[in-house]
Every structure is written in C-alpha cells, then in structure tokens.
Amino acid sequence: MFEIKKHRVLASGISLYQVYAPRVAKSALPGQFVIVRTHEEGERIPLTVADYNAEKGTVTIVIQAVGKATHRIVDLKEGDSFLDFAGPLGHPTELIDEKIEDLKDLKILFVGGGVGAAPIYPQVKWLADKGIKADMILGARSEEQLIIVDELKEVTNNLHLCTNDGSVGRQGFVTDVMKDLREKNEFNYDLIIVIGPMIMMKSVSELTAEYGIKTIASLNTLMVDGTGMCGACRVSIGGKTKFACVDGPEFNAHEVNFDEAMRRQLMFKSEEGQALIKLQKEKEGHKCSCKG
Image (cartoon, rainbow, N blue to C red; front, side, top):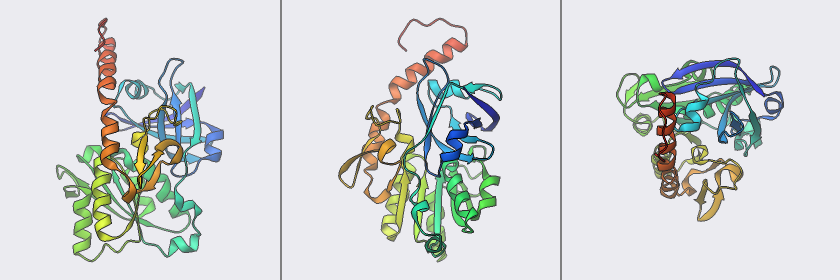
C-alpha cells in the first residue's frame, strides 16, 4: 500500500497528492509517469509525475476528475492509500540528455494548459536546479482553473498567464500570448515544450511550425493502460505508428497527427461517460441496473 502523505485541492475537480513511494521517488525523472490503482478491481490510471523527492521518498501526482476511476481517486484523503503505484514509466524529457552548458545557451519556453501545468513543473524545476530559468505561458478557462501558479513562479523566469474569460492575465488563449510576444519581438525561443489539452497542443504546434521553432509535445492525455498493450495511445508520428506510453510520452510536435489523436480520445468518451453516470447514482444511493 502507498500512503497519501499530503492532499491538496487545487481547483474544482483537481487534486494534488503526495504519495509515499520511495522506490519510485528514487528513480523518477521529469517527463515520466506512474500507474496507480485504488483497489483490487480498480482501473489502472496513468498519471504524469508532477514532482518527486528522493530523500522523503515521495512522489507528487495531480489528478483531474473526468471519468469514474478519477472521480474515485479524488475522494481519497490524507492517510488513505493507493493499492498500486507503479513506475517510473515512459521516457523522461530529452532535456536531461543534453549537456548543461548547451542548455544554458538555449532560450526555452514551456506552454501549459489546465492540468498540463503539473507535468511541466518537474521539468522547469529540474532546469532551475541547474541554474537555468525558462519562460512559461500558462492558460486555463478561468482563474480558478489555474493551478500551482506560485510554485511555477519560483522556478521560471517569466510566467505569462491567460484565461479564456479574462479573470486573470491576458484574455484569450496561449497562442494569443505567443502572438503578442512575437509582435513585441520577445519571442526569440530555441525550444518550446507544450503540455495540455490536445487541441491546444495542435494550435501551438501549428504556430511554432510557422515560426520555425523546434517544439516538443507530451501526449500523456492519450494514455489509458500505460503499457502499450491496449493500443489506446497509438498515434502517427511522422507517418509512423508509435505508442505514447512506451515510445513517449514526448514527441516532436510537428510530426504528431493531432487530428488522429483527438479522434482516438473520442472513442473512449461514451463508455467512460456511462460509467461515470452509474457511479454518481451509486453515490446518491440509487440502484442502477441499466448499462447507462
């Protein structure tokens, strides 16, 4: 059992968990993920590592309640435990393979959307620990949905916020901020790393392709089983079939077939929605014998 040492509600339906998993914490690197399971019949949920502390033996994950399994997870509190907490899995960010002196010569921008801020955090923190401060653009639907802003401010150089409703920062999308910076001649980046909703990553990659800037996208939102066996995260990268969980989750954004990836995500929404409705009825004390 893997005990929850800390639980923090970041926003409506979004929770942070610091879990005692010393073996995972000792080996984890930025960009990797874990697979969690709450109980014996529980669904396997892949979640990107949001932070780790080898000395304390803890790994931090951020979970957004979307389907039945994730709604069960966000009901957990401090002192509760995960039955399984397997990892680290997947390839770490390619940044760790670069020489530090080479990274110091690069101007790096991270672009995050919603809970995409969580998997970005260990990467910018890793860079900051090496004396490198990257810039970041963080977007969300509203101020309430912006998460770990204070933590990100500590490890980034410039943190630009934007919200769809204009409740904080620039009103609009992350691509609007990118265009604003370019108009001010402040968009001279060598590398961009984008993590967030698939449609956002597609928009960012189209824009950076126009600008001619190398861009990396994380396809962690596409993963279901986390082992490559289910085939749910199969995606075309440069015309070749890859699996986000075993070949990624990070890929050259300009080679990702985002339209195919988004169609694949939609394949699971109907079934997951039915399971969620059943769970909500169970919580309300109703007996439901129907499939929906």
